[in-house]
Length: 485
Image (cartoon, rainbow, N blue to C red; front, side, top):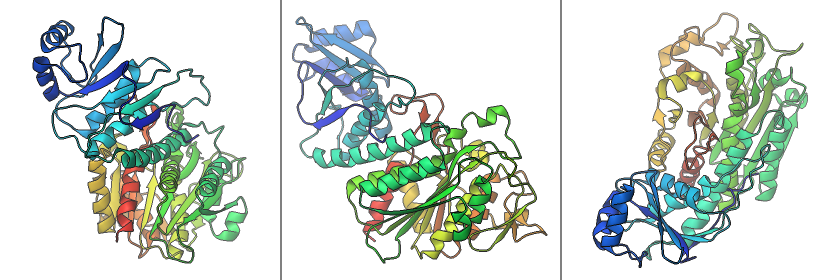
C-alpha cells in the first residue's frame, strides 16, 4: 500500500502519437481563431468547424477527441475559466479517463494565462491522485502508460515532480489505510503501518499494546479497546535529531472501527466506521510524505489505536476513568471514544515538551452538520500554527474553517462525579465542546485541533469514492514552513 496508482510521470516532451491538451476557456477562444501549436494538422478553420459540431466549449469535465488522417489522436480536456488550481487538478485527473491502457502520452497545459509552479504542481497532483486505485478486494486490470507533462521553461519541473510524488505517496497511503475494512486493519495492523514507515525512512518507533498500556499510563485508550478481541495499541514515532524537544507533535485518532460501544450506533451509523481511524491515517500519510522528502525536523507522532467494540468488559456510561495525566473523566457516552484516545496521547506528547501540538481526528458529526463533508473544522490556541494552516489550506484547495473555543461552554462538561465529563450536557455545539475537552489535555502547549470527515461520498476524477487523503499536502507544507522558524 501507499503508492500512487499505476502512473509513471515525467517532465518534458514525451510521446507524440498521443497527447492530451488542457484547455481553459481563454485558450479555447484563441485556439478557435488561430489553431494550436501542438495540433499542426488543425488550422483555425478546420478546428473551429470541428468544435462547432462537437459543442466543446472547454468547460470543466468536457473532453473531445481529434483524429488525424493517419489515425493518431489528440484529446482536448476542458478545465473551465482561468487557472484555478482546483480546476486544473481535476481536469488533469479527467484526462486519465480518455487515454487507452498502456500507451505513453504527453499532457500539455493551457496556453492562455501565466502558468506557474502552483499550476504545474496542481496538474501533477491531479494525475498522480487521479490514478489511485484501491484494489485490496476488487481486481482492476487497468495499466497506465507513462505521462510526460509539458512544463514552462521558467518552472523547475523536476523539483515539483519530486515534491508532488512524495505528497501523492503520502496521500495514497492515507487513502489505503482508511479504505481498508476493519477486518483487515485492527489496532495491531495500524501500529505496524506506523512502524514500517519509521523503518523505511530512518525514524524511531516504539509500540505498546494490551495491558502494557495500563503500565504506561494510557488507561483511557485501554478502557476503550479492552472489550475487543484485538488489543488496543499506542505507537510513538520520532523523527529528526535525537535528544531535541519536538518542534511539532502530531496526534491521530486511530479508532479502527466504532460500534458505539454500549451506546450502540444504529446500523446506518456503522457503515463508514472503517474511516474512524482517519486522523491516524492522515498522520501516517504525513509521515510517509515527510520521510520521502528527506526533511529534518524534530518531530513526534503519537498514534493511539483501538476498536470500540461491545463485550463483557465494555466500558460503561457513568464509569469514571483516570487519564494519562491523572485527570478523572466521567463517561457520558461510550460513542464519544475518540476524544478519550486523543486525551491520553496528547498528555503523553505534552510530557515530551513539544513546541506545538496538532491533533487530527474524525471526531464529531456536529462538525459535519456545521461545515459539511469537505471543510474540516479547525480549533486552536496556537495562533501562528492556526494562521499557517488556514492560509496554506486555501492555497492547497483543502480549505479549513476556524471554529471558536467558547469558554462558557466548559460548564457543559462539568460533573459532580469527576474532574470533567467527556460529553456535553447540551446537545448543541458538539464539535466545540469536544474541542474544549481536548484543550484541557494540551495544557500550556500551543495547540491546534482538526475535526475532519476524511471521505469522498460520490467520487470525483481526482478523488475516487472512498477515503480522500485530505490535508496531507496542507500539513506537510506547514511543516516545511516550521523548518524556517
